[in-house]
Image (cartoon, rainbow, N blue to C red; front, side):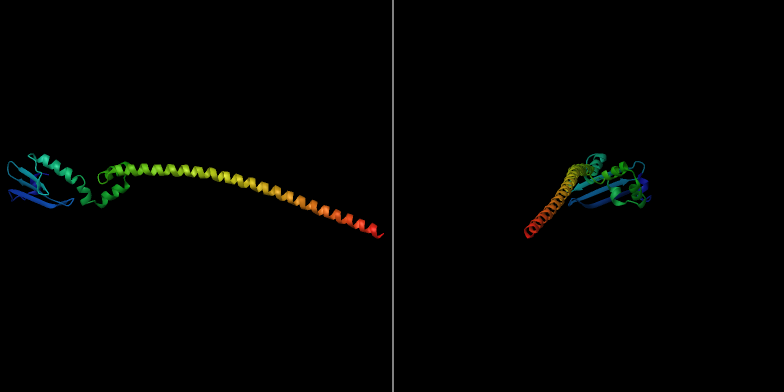
Length: 181
């Protein structure tokens, strides 16, 4: 932009002052410019009553950029529908790059590392539980086989008991028959 873009053609100079607060500290920023053959401008910055204006305008601009994160302003003031849609449709690298201008991506990486750690722990626990489940299934299989074997033994024993009881009754009957004859 040049001076003609923001100074009315009927004016010789323009001054804009912005007052507000950042982190609960009041600030005042004044930008002045004058037209003519040799345009000049000035920039003054005061924060919480302390004058932070440097001798060179570019140094004051650097102070301003560091205090206000001026790279964020376009993203916080207006995010058009097209830009938002573009961000949502962007690839992961572009999304992270844009996000890093608003959010500390160190947190993003920390969260990713924590998620990986939790996933590893859960996968290890799942593996342990899978092994335990297989062992339980083997134990159930062995116990079922043993139960079947014991049931067969019990049936065999019951048959032998019945046969012995029948033989004893038969012997008793024979003995009674001999006594009565």
